[in-house]
Image 1: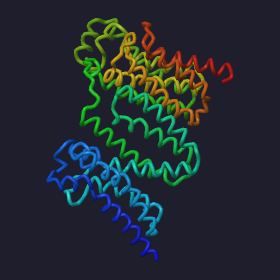
Image 2 (image 1 turned 180 degrees about the horizontal axis):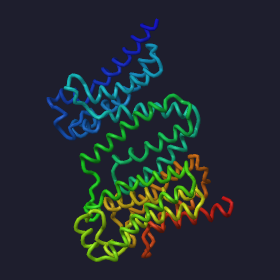
Image 3 (image 1 turned 90 degrees about the horizontal axis):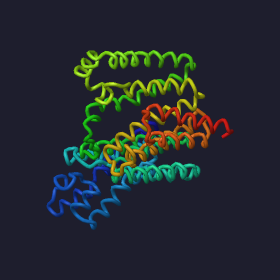
Image 4 (image 1 turned 90 degrees about the vertical axis):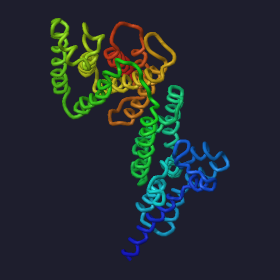
Length: 402
């Protein structure tokens, strides 16, 4: 009996792969003596079928590519495959679409098939409670904000699916579909990243940013301070951050007060300090000081939230503002500020359902003040104003009983 079940399980995977290998776009194109892998986007999928062959062929291609993953899972279920192999048969269908044996394993990207399975899973979640509507509604808001900013869809999966994945583990922690949903959504995220990189959808021409891009790239590592703060005392984290602050302060003071040292540092490590920071503290130092003060002055959950708003808000506003900024507001852009707001919504959503136990009203107060602090036309570095002012706003809300 066990051998028979093993055979059924393996057979369901094989069937899933071969169903995935069937690429309607490729065969429709062959009928017209066209190799669709050499035309348009070079991808034998729905969008390229529409571009190269037209709507008549794109519709059945979309229909089959979207449903074939669900069809494979249905066959596996009918055959009596174990639960995990039913889910794996859907994943094998995506793999078959991407690596068909008869095309030397050069197929499509499998996004339509993955999307079909995701929609099927969402129906299952819906049947287990209406909480998924809340998550989807929130994701729609994120989609609206970033569609306006970027005017492109590739980046949406990168922003929306992490929120959805997180929501499923929060609202439906015991459902066995969570892991499969996450794996398939990770595939869609990776394809989105691949498109952004290969098609150069995010282009930043600012010379200062390009020569100091690593400063933005390492900013998320500041989260480690906050993670440590979850497990150690306030005094210990203040000592840890204080040591780092002193190192940066000494470097800045030496650089600013000693002209020869400043010139030497500018020449030899010019990619560390910006031109505008020759006679002032670097934004890295200001960020560390603000983080130190936030932890010193505010209750733990508020301090963590304020610093998280700064970390991701600064990254989002810089990248999206420089790449897609069209409307100037003071010395910022509307698009950059909206991206900051979008990051606040995403991180605030995650924090709200986290063990930090911070109320929605408190989060809203901090979430409104954070992007306003960033865009205010005052001669104070927003690395300082964002966490301090948003922390004050949240503390005030907490004081008044929210």
